[in-house]
Length: 246
Image (cartoon, rainbow, N blue to C red):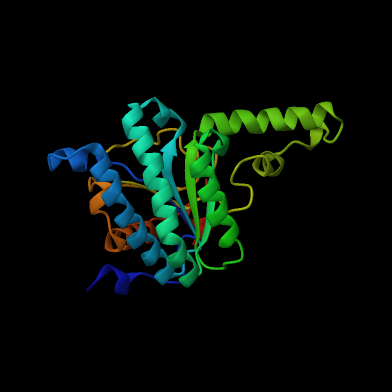
């Protein structure tokens, strides 16, 4: 029986976040430049989003480029940015056909002007779509996001817009990049590494974590379905006992 046939459609995660790791190693194994892996990783993105849409998962957030990735060799960074521009341009017709809404989080003003222009145009064009919300985490770092949220709240307190006593989790979340989406219930990391890498640290407080050794360019919708099946076998207690949640 295929994984898809085993999934309980009434117990799907609303939001799946993915750390797409292994592009460079995949290319190296084939004797190619790292950029070759990034190009093939785009195929995986398309297939996984298609799989999420088929199931009815509303939010998919991809760790596309971290704030730390700016420290990579300049050639690779520029190649990734050029790939991003060309990919968004090529995929926009598919986004419209499949009702996908494109979103982005992170320090977007750090992106090259050409890349940011293409991204903003695509987000604007897909803004009324009501299907999967595909969010790209670009120039994103969770610690920086949390610090910025704290600064924003401090400014609001200083200006008199907010009382210290009124600061709570809801207020804090409204100042995060992800303020308009639910927290991820499932976090998938490919590539065989077992770490979070400064990704959605606040938001994944109660997410189920799923790690696979499969490198991202080899990851397909069937692998997504396998991860969701694993998720559905887990008991999500949120600090309570089994008796309380069952």
